[in-house]
Image (tube, rainbow, N blue to C red):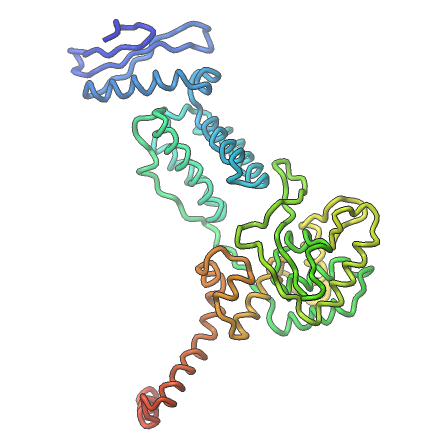
Length: 399
């Protein structure tokens, strides 16, 4: 066992307090000198584990740079690893970076990872209940990941997240509603009676409403993605943003299932041809984007959304519809037409059928009775039940 107070740390028993002490030396940033730090434990094993953790930390570059391992530095290292291994997009990288920067300004965000308790984490999470459940889930996930990493790397002896409960937001979950059939018909009539000079995003809105594309997917379409002969569109990229918020062309869709070949509805054909002709004649449009502004390389999604809000508010007094609602309207019409959920999943580019089922729960419920009626009709046709049975059941329910 190293001598008491040596640079490698030491373990010794305090007879008076009947506790095992783990002692090591640490550089004091304020004084510029080494100082002894001592922590006591009930058992020798706990003390040895703690000292081993400290010695392991000291070999880490983060520890050397910061004289400890700050929580936010581990978060940054984990984020960079994900980005370097292409697990997250530049947009996600920028968003999480900003979250870490905000956390760093809080009391818990400025502490070393081995000093943070479950109560401190819980106290911090309870302060963000004004955010959406989605945001809270992401923040909670960041903490869970970073402390799991800390355990695996030997930075800490126990994972404080074991006793932490993810709080529920004070906000109601935001529901993206679809246009009603009447609203969609009125909006479509408005669009097709406008030329592009008076409604420059007309064809974006139509493609979203009648092909179900995300707005970034629609804005990423090029003339090369359109198969005029077979009337199909190849969706394989999306406009996104980099870590600094600048609009860039992504090399893939939002999810792997987003890459898909979609049929172009017959009535949309002329509008897509119109957009292709514009792209072919447009200067400084080497990519042949269907939707490219003259003054910028790419169209900003927020500009399309803002224009949609202005039109719907001014013309129809509708204030709760976004560009994503147009895509949602397409999915809703597909289900209302009787389309199989699996087909809807493929057309919408959902990674899992449960996403489709959960997103359109209310629509499926609306048509559940129709499907039950089909089963009952089948029973009758196959003589599995009689009309007398149904009549008796109806009379019973009336009573």
